[in-house]
Length: 142
Image (tube, rainbow, N blue to C red; front, side):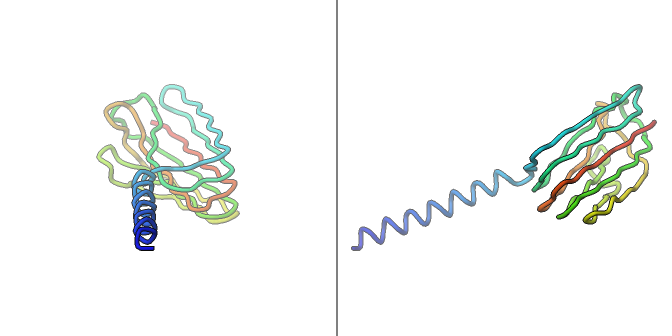
């Protein structure tokens, strides 16, 4: 009987440890299903459009504009049928320039200036919580 109790305690402890490790590994992870991304960029101007069926989590992404250390005019449009979806544009050092958060069944638009990093990349984060049938679009122009 005591051995059975020790085995159960050990299994419970291992299950909790495995869950904790899995949560640490998934931190900063965006799980997204049915994702389609189209990018149309020429001479540093253009757009990125991403649509998806479902999304959960958070991830930093980049758009390679090809213009190093350049101030860009950016327009972001975010929409989601249900759940929460937000997109944050980042300066090269990581500070947030602005965040656009979608409301269910309502597209939200915001514009501003963002600087690319020394590799010509525009950095942004996508945050989703139970997001369904969503999209985001980023328009850029030097």
